[in-house]
Image 1 (spheres, rainbow, N blue to C red):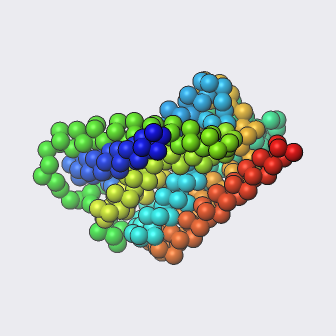
Image 2: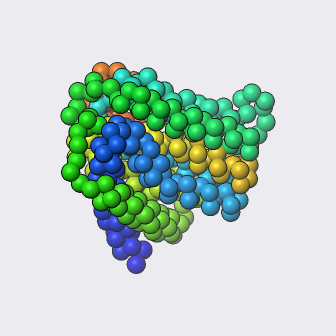
Image 3: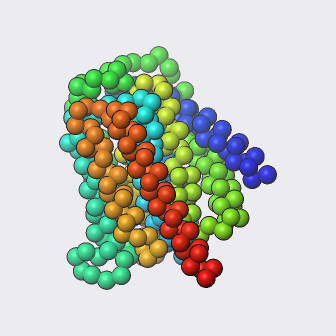
Length: 329
């Protein structure tokens, strides 16, 4: 029965993503908002709702490894897995604005999180305190305010070579229909993702997999399925800026808003998530900056990013196997 629910929920994720992307693009064109910003604001924040629910519940249940591992794992998968796969089929356009602001911010908040977790400035056990959470929430507010302020002032630079730049295009679809698509697509994505994750975890536990591994892989990838579906659908519609905005916006939202909010429930002890996991997250955030200097993330870069994700997953699997053998001994 679990496998049937898994397949049905996956279909719901794809259907919901199509509605969300179509509605988001239409709304963006109505209000002359750039595709990247609408992807970061509506797509990124909206598709990160599963991560928010999982991490917040993890904090409420006193399980910080799930709360933190879900975010760290999702951010790694979003860039290495989702952007890697998307670029493999559709080279992703990267604007000068992305290189100057959004991508560096993504790297910056990843570094800030790591420094806060390991108490780089004051020392102590790895933990995200309530004060750390407030700092992250302030970072989120500043990012969202500046994104909309800058977009309103400049209306996006018209330098993207990809025809996916569409903020100057218009659409004949009624505004209420576009909003309805977003309003329908988002909950379908979230509910389908919830069923998918629950059943994936149930299947994994039947095979004796531990919580840390589940949070960094299955839960992280499962809650990132909306981002994967939304990004691939956006790329299929030749709107790679929306795909990029969705992933980068989601990563920034995951760190600043989700962990910031979860830390207000209770301080999050990060003992189960290692410094290697945080370093991989920072490394993943840097890659789009490195590959985007020529104006796009091409297929070769996409292959490299995806192979990095495979290597990281192999590392987690090997660690899981070693721990399992040690436990048995």
